[in-house]
Each structure stands twice: as structure tokens, then as C-alpha cells.
Length: 438
Length: 176
Image (cartoon, rainbow over all chains, first blue to last red; front, side, top):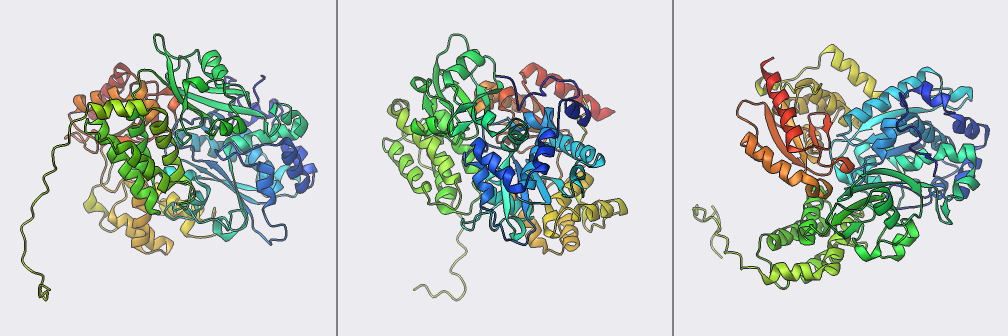
């Protein structure tokens, strides 16, 4: 497939506005500005573009939830928080083609009639935030952004807003709280951000890759976009492959290639002398898939049918050298660290899961541990928490427990009881004043 | 290598903080990005961390006063996020990714090597204040694992040898 989203990768000076314009850049935005905003939304609806951030919600439909009669202002937020383990695609777009993202943001902002857009980028991406700042300054200096977008009378400002190290801020309501200057505690939905979002105004939050699809939908048409992939699973997709493959990296492929094509053809298969054991299809928060599921199509519906999810398209490949109990423990550490602490099942559950898995790895597993882990996961998922982080930790861990029971059994069969912990004995300061002992 | 060293202003000089004119100017500009003053909190904290090297209690009070928030609120925000230093950091903060893709691609060995070479554990700093070791969660560069972020810069596809070369160079710069 000809590259759409990674077209600029390898082109010298690809991040500059001149290079972008010479390659036909900002033509999609010109087309959009010639249409009514609703016609732009219609085009995106027809393309069947689904959100690339993880949930796979139809992008055009998300836009239609913005109330039509709201006096405004409305906001567009580009989610560049990119924190899902195994995901590193947005950085690729920002690094090589920042103007593609800015054009996508401008198209989406115009469609929802927003005059201000924010790019919420993870705090660690200092270099990539600077690339965006520079691209915005260039576009503003040439009249592509600002009070008159390409002389159309439509005004748009884009601001880069850096996070400060919190996985949870990739969740859209947490991102909104963080953008407002608060701790990143997710909000209860409804109201959805499209109705009450940032600063209490209608807000659409779209992922970098989603927005980067928009310029080509405008220039080449919805039908062209929908012809890539299959119905309801359309367009080019960035697959990020990491772990035990010969050639890890970001690959742009038509939606719906199989994991076998991704892992074996494009990434050269797993390392010499090893066999594929398991893979996470869409970031570490997706249920793990086993080697025999490699022929599943890497699209939203096929992954869901296979009991997992495409998520962010971050494929983490694990070969037979990996101890799945250790892998589960590693991920439990991640989620226990990143749980925002707002909801008990997630805050406490992820800590318990981490402690139990650490104990099994340390050689002190107990026969009841797998069942306990499943119970903890059950309590933290399916609507028991405000945001999906509860599910995000429960799904990978419970799926590892269910799909690799023999690995848990092996650890537990060889386990020794943990030596009892000696609790520190504090000197007693005597009864509290006024306490009569009853 | 261009990685800039962090120069943490000593705590006693940050007991009471007054923003200088250029900082005030930057804050005023940042406030134009948002309809509320509170929304500028993260950018202003970043600005302060760049300026002072860390977020001292005196900085929290000054930021709170400037943005019309209580120090308690600002403190709450500062401690929610992992990237704001609440104590003076070393000149080079080695942030080693510990999450799955890095861990299975040599990251675990890198951590062991760093601990042995520097003689410190996670959260600690070398006695001369050059290096500080921090275990961090996914840095979003899994395709080039293992990854270490040093101050603001990413170092990817590392081996023990390439990382050693980077540390050698950074140690040398201490004397310069």
C-alpha cells in the first residue's frame, strides 16, 4: 500500500511547511473550508473512519454529538498523550509530518466550529512538543492558522499543552481535567465531553492518528478511504510492533491485514531459535492473544470477535523465552503505578494484583492465587470504575491467568511458603489522654 | 550529545520566590492560551522547573499566588504528576523504562548494569550529584527498546556499551 500517514518518513526536511506544501499539503483543508462544516462531517461519516486512540468509535459520529445550537465556544483537543505500553505511532507522525497533524486538527476544528484547539502531548515528549510549536509558528506566519485560516474568515488557534507524566491523562475526561490545570481524575460520563467538555464547553477529543487521516479523506474522498480495508474497518492503520521481532517499528498497512502478515512478513518474525508464544494486539490493555490466533485480522471487529481488541494498534510480541507470570507482574506494576487512585476497585485491585504476582514470581505462590487474581480483576472491570483503567488492568492480567494456567501451576507447585513478616513493634506510649479503656 | 544538565537552585535560595521580568512575561503569554488562569498551571510549573530545576515549596507558593490558587491545590497537582521534581534533582536524571517491551528487550539487564555501575538504586543519586536513577513506566518508544530518557532527551536502541559511552561523556562534562 502507498503510504498515507507515513508519507513523509525518510523525506529530507519533511517537517517544514515548504516541504509539506510542495507535496500538496493543506489542500484537504482548502477543500473543507469550501464546504459547510456539516458537509465535512458527512464526508468523515461516509469514510467510516474509526478513532485510532483505542476505542474505535466512529469519528464523524463523535462530532455529531456536539450540540448544534450551543452558543460556543467549542474546543477540539488532539490527544497526543500516547502512553499505552506498546504504542509509539503518534510520535512518528509528529516527528516526520507535523503539518499533516495540524491540517487534520484544522479540518476537525472547522467541522465542529471550534476556534481553539489544544494538542495535549505527554510531558516526556519535549522534543516533539518543540517540533509542533515550530510547525504552528510557521503555519501562523503564513496565514494558515490564526484569525483568517487561508483567508476564509474562519479563525483557529492551536496551542500545545504538555502533560507531566500520567498514563491516566490519555483517557479523554482525565485529559480534560489535566488541561484545566487539575489532577488528572477522570470524570463520570454522562455528560460526555461533546456536551460538557473542557472549561464546561462542548469538546471533541481525537487521537493524533485519527486527525492525520482527515486531510486525505478530504482530498481523495470518503469512498477512496472506505475502499481500504473492509466495511466498518476502513483506512490505513499504523501498527506499532515491539518486543521479540527481528524488525520492530511502525508499519502503515491497510486495516485488516492479519497478525501473521504483520509479525512474519513485515517484522521478519520472532528472533532466531525462538517461537511465538503470545502477543498483545492493541497495547498492553488488550487481552493477550496466543500463538494460534496469529491469523486473526488486525482490525476492530475481528479482534473483538477473537475476544480481544485492536486498541491503539500497539502489537507487543512475546516469544517462548518469556515467563507469562513475570509478564503479568510487569504489567501489574505499570497499572498499579498509573491508577489515579480515584476508584477503590482499581486503586486497591491493581496493588493487590501486583503484590500477589510479585509473590508468585518470588517463589511463594499459593494454590488459590489464580482464582484470587481473577476475582480482583472481575471487581475492577465492567463498569465498576469511573474510567476504563480498571478494565485496562483487569483484561490483560485475567487473560494471562486464563490462557496460561500451566505457567501459574508450575510456579505454584515449586513454591515455598513465604516466611512470616515480622511486624515492627512500636513502643507503646500508654493510653491516650481521656481514654478510659472501655 | 547536547543533553543539557539540570542546575537545581538550592532550597535556601527558593524560600521565597519572586518571578523576574522575563518569567512574568512568559506567564502572561501562557495565560492568553486559556480562558481560565488555572489552566495555565501545568505550563507555569514547567516554566518554573526549567528556571529553578525543581518545584520547591517556595515555588509552589509563588505559582499559587500568581494564578490565584491555594498552595494546597498547587501542591496536589504537583504531586499527582511524576515529572515534577519536589526535591533538587541530580545534574542528569536517568529515567529507565521498566515496562514490558523494554523489559523483555534488554531493559532489565540495563537496569542491573546501571545499578552496579553507579552503585545506587532507583530513586537514589550518586554522591557527587551527577547521576540520579529513576525507574519509569512506558516512555512510548517501544519499537526502539530499551529506552532511557536523560533529562529531556530520549536514548533508544541502547546496549550496555552504548549506554556506558553516553554516561562516560556526561561524566566528563561535569568537569567542564
